[in-house]
Image 1 (cartoon, protein in one colour):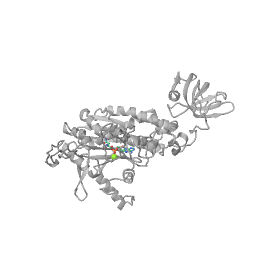
Image 2 (cartoon, helix red, strand yellow):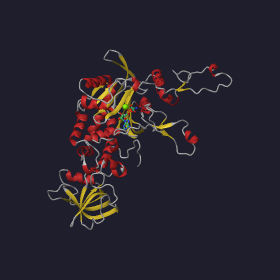
Image 3 (cartoon, protein in one colour):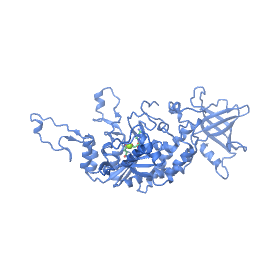
Length: 512
Ligand code: 4AD
Ligand code: MG
C-alpha cells in the first residue's frame, strides 16, 4: 500500500525499531529535484505531508524521464544510509512510474530561489513550494485546533455558527462593500433579484449577535470581503475573520480575557503539534519559497510571549495618545501625522505603541472616541488630562508587533432607544417612503411611526431586524473579530498577508 512521506520519515526519526527499515514501501508525490550521476541518480520526492522531502536513489535508466515537478509513483526498499549522510534513510527504488511528466524547460518552479513577486504571479503553482505547502497544512491545523479551543474555553463552550455571506448591510459603515448582482442581460432584472441591494459581508457580527441572544457564546470563521483600495501587506479584499460574540457580557475586561485566552490556548496547542514545530524550524530564506522575513529565533520568542508571557497590557486610547504625544515632545519620536485625540491611531502610531512603548508585547488599546467608531458600540466616558469627560465607546483593538491591529471588539449598545439614536447619528435611518396622498395633502395625513422610538418620517429599512434584537429579550453583550490571516502570518513569520493566503485577492489582483 502507499505510504505518506510524513509517516515514513517520522518513523525513521523516532527512537526504537523502525518498522519500515528494509521493507518494500511505495510513495506517490512530486519530484522536487533530481541529480543524475554516472552510476546513480538521486531524487527528492515530496507528497505534501511534511516539509522534508524523501530521498530516493535510482538507477540511471529509472531516472531517464524524471524531471523536477513530475508526478511519480516510486516503490523500493527503505534502507539505512551509511553514517555521514544528511538523512538517516533513503529509498532504493525498484520501480519508478512517471504518471505526470513535466517539461523542465517550461515548469516555473525549480529548486532555486524565486522572488515573492514572481511566486505571487503563479499562486496555483506557488502552493507546491515547500514553505507554501507547509502554510497550507499549518492553516488546516489551526482550523482543527480552533474547534478545541472554543469547545473547552473557560468562559463556557462556544457554539460554532454559520452566518450568511450575502447581507443587506454594511456592518462597519465604512462604505467598503462589494455589491452583489446576478449575471444577466437587463439591469432592471438584476436589480430585482433580492428586491433590494445586497452585498458580500464585511463582518458577521450583526448576525452573530442574533445567534448569541439565544445560544450565549458563539463563534464563526467566515470569509469577509472589503473593497478597500489599500495596497499594503496587511490588507486583502477577501480574508477570513474569526468572530465571537458573548451574551450577558457587560465588562470589557471579561471580553478581553476571552480573546487573550483564545489566542494563548491556540498558540499552545499549535506548539504541541508536528506542523507547529515545522513552522518554528522551517527554513526562512532561499529556495523553500518562503516570503517570511522573521528569523527562527525571534519566532520562538513570539510564540513564547503569546503562550507564557505575562497578562497583556491594557491601556486606554486616551492614555495611548498622551504617551505618543509625550514621545514626540520628550523622546524625539517622529510621525508623519502628529497624534491627536480626535483623529484616531494611524498605522505608524500603532507600531510605535506596540514595538517601542510595549517592547513587542501584545497590548489592548481601549475606549476609542465615539465619533470615529461604528454605530453599534456601547458608550463609555474617559476623563481627559484637563479633567473633562470625553465621549468614548467600550471597544478595544489588540495590537501585535509587525501586523499591528490583529483584532477589534466591543460591548454592543443593547438598549433600543440608544441604538436608534446612534443609527440616526450615523445616517443609517432612511426617510420613510410616504404613501401616495391622493387628494389630501401629505401634511394632513397623520402617520404612526413605523417602529418604536422612530419619528413618523423615519424608516429602519434593512436594519429593522437588527433593532428587533433590542426590542425583545436584549441583554448586554459583546464580541470581537480577529484577522485570521494576519494572525497566521504573525505565527508563521510571514510578513505579508498576500503570502499567507494561497490565492490572495487585493486591489487590482484576483487572477487565479
Ligand atoms: O476591526 P474590524 O473592521 O472589526 C469588525 O469588522 C468587527 N465587526 C468585528 C467584530 O466585532 N465582530 O475587523 C476585524 C479584524 C481587524 O482587526 C483586522 O485584523 C482584520 O479584521 N482586517 C483585515 N485583515 C486583512 N485584510 C483586510 N482588509 C482587513 N480588514 C480588517
Ligand atoms: Mg478595527
